[in-house]
Every structure is written in structure tokens, then in C-alpha cells.
Image (cartoon, rainbow over all chains, first blue to last red):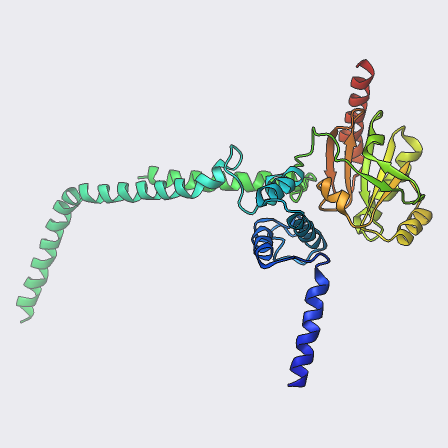
Length: 154
Length: 185
């Protein structure tokens, strides 16, 4: 039990040591967590600054906390980062000319897939008639043959 | 019958072409981690920080105006900076260009030792101990090099060590162009 307590105390120490700047209240804490999730760590490009422990992510987190403590709104803080690092810093890129294909791509693919299914279905609906006449005749022929053989055998 | 296969083959070839193009660009030295800076064409972010060598003096963004300069973000802990440093030193000796250093998240003693050991190519290095000014410059991977024109507007940014090729093909042509444009104004 005592080891657990000691470990707990130790881990609390590290958590506090990571961020230099503190957060004043729960509401600010919530805002900070949300913002940190939307901002990309520029060096570890597939992590948000909330996930990453890269030096730069720590600096970004401190900067965000500082701005929250200064009373800036979420939009102001995001603008501040975008002004310096571009849209790339946003995990959720805005819709514009450059990102149009990124946003529309999945929908276009769904539509294309749907059209292809429709086409295939229509082709199958149309073709049975032509395909069948030949196949039916062949089937009949085979059936007759086998029944003949069966009769003879029996 | 064959037409059924044309579309999938065309899509496949298109994907191969796109991947091939990017791979080719990478083999030609394109850095896929490089992200275009939104700061190009904008005035340099305002700052005023102490100098690395003379802590009692400060250097401000205003002082960048009046000449074309290279602003180089560096640190003694940065491995790629070591790779680039020799070129910077040679530039400072042979080419007429003022190189301003932003010493990024460094310890003063380490940075001073670095300059003593490897040469000091900078007209001035500012000491950005907590990296706050660098964030204003949109720095995310040292070394980074900016070209700032006479009006204090950022014209170019390169992330990663500059090479002799970059210098010859991109940096110097732009510096010369900016100088000519500045002379005629």
C-alpha cells in the first residue's frame, strides 16, 4: 500500500513538471484539452499537440495555455497558430480550394461506387434473356443425356 | 469485353503515376515534411530579444529593415545545424550577405562554445531561450532559413539545412533580385 502511495505521489510530480504554465479553472482546462486535440504537432505530423511529447508540442501547449490565461477566445488562439503555421496545423482542415478534394473525395468515391453497382445490376437484368436461351438448351440437352444414361444403366 | 478492364487499369496507372512523381521529386531532393509557410509575403513578426554575445544589448525586428538579410534559426543541440554550419561560415566569408541568427531554445554557454569551436557566421545572433519568438516565426524544425527583404518582408523560407545547391539555385538568385528591386525603388 505504501509503495502504491509513493508511486502515486511520484507520478503526480512528473505530471506537474511537464507543463510550465498552469491552468486556472476547470472550464479553461476543458478548453485547453479541446484546443490541444485540434492542433497538429508540426514535427510529429500525425499527432496532435495533446498526444505528442515532442519539445515543440510542449511549447505549443504552453503557448495555448498562456493565451487561455490571457483571456483569448478559442477562435483567436486558432487564428494565431494558423497565421504562423498555416492550415496544416489544424487537424480538421478548413474547406477551401486546396482541400476540396480531401473533403469531397470520400463522397465522390461513394457516388462512383453506387453508379458502378447500378450499372452492373442493370447489365445483369438485361442479359439473362440472351444468356439463357443458349444455356437452357444446353441444360436440357445435358439433362436428357443423363436421364438416357440412367435409363440404360437401370 | 476488353473495355471492362480499361477503367481499373487506367485508375491503377494514374495511382502509379502520382506515386512515381512524388518519389521522383523526393529523389531530386524534395522534402516531403516541408510545409509551405503562410508567413511568406508578410512582415516579420515583431520581436525584441537580447543578443547572444552581448546579453545587455537587444536586437529588434526593426533592425532587419534596410537590407536584404538571411535569418537562420539554429541551436547547439541541433544535429542538422552542424551539417549546415560550415556552409554558413563560408558564406559569411565569401558572399556579401548579412546573416542574422536566432539561437533557438539553447543554453547560452553551449551556444557560445559552438560559435567559438565552429566559427561565427552571424552578424548578430539573438537569444530566444524559451522559443517564443521562434513560434511567432512559425519555426517547427531547426535549422530554418528565411530571406527578409529591405522592407522587412519575409520572401522565402527553407526548413532543414541549406545546401550549396539551394544556395546557388534558390537563395542567391532571390537575394540578388530583391537587391536590384530595392535599388530601383
